[in-house]
Length: 297
Ligand code: AMP
Image 1 (cartoon, rainbow, N blue to C red):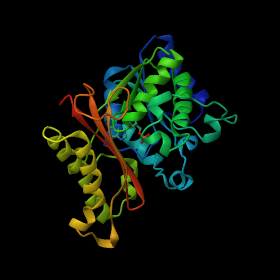
Image 2: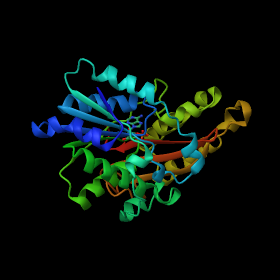
Image 3: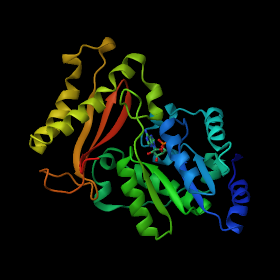
Image 4: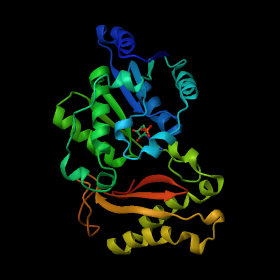
């Protein structure tokens, strides 16, 4: 494994791959790596000669300064995990961990617009978030020039945004969506999970359990009823299951949407592909998750 902290070192490390016309895969991350990230990296290592894993907490995609400050930073651990995965793989793996100044030597003035796909769910609640994501991903695409880029379906709307970014920029990069990795109890792995107290971590799997029950209900109940049931079940969870420290869920949104347009739908017949996307606050931490309603896995 090679660690590069400057764009020059990254370019030098990538030069042999470019000269030899070898395939390059890119896995963008914000670090605090867990098995979800590692599943993306493993797949990239299988499918490419050279893999770049970027570790960069991108300030311009945070609309909440407290979230940015509290975002976990575990670079040494992250590099160890990547090294273990790279070792013996026979592939060249480059960890790219630049500073903010290295990534943005000039003030960022570019903004991206994505139309209806950014006007739902995360978009209105995190103003500027997707433009900030697009700026950093486009910069990484330009620096790395990968053939393939790997993104997790946990951030379902982000994948739609990157797909649209690729359409707008016409870059010859294949987007590879990767399935959500969950803890044994069902909680979607997230770097933010480490900020949950033990009691909150115990409670958090109820999110996925509720979503799974919603899928069962979708075969006999109307869509609006299922949608309301999910939000009500989580918002009143602490009344039915008393929790220590006054812990309770607060659902920010739960939307059942067309999996391509991301627009909310009214009936189970409105789209061939349907997912439910949720954002829930627990213990001061914002958790997101996604469940597929149609077609079944
Ligand atoms: P992040 O470091 O949170 O920006 O995530 C980097 C990449 O890892 C994104 O493409 C995420 O969607 C993906 N990712 C994060 N958590 C998971 C997970 N539990 N399963 C699969 N992919 C994930």
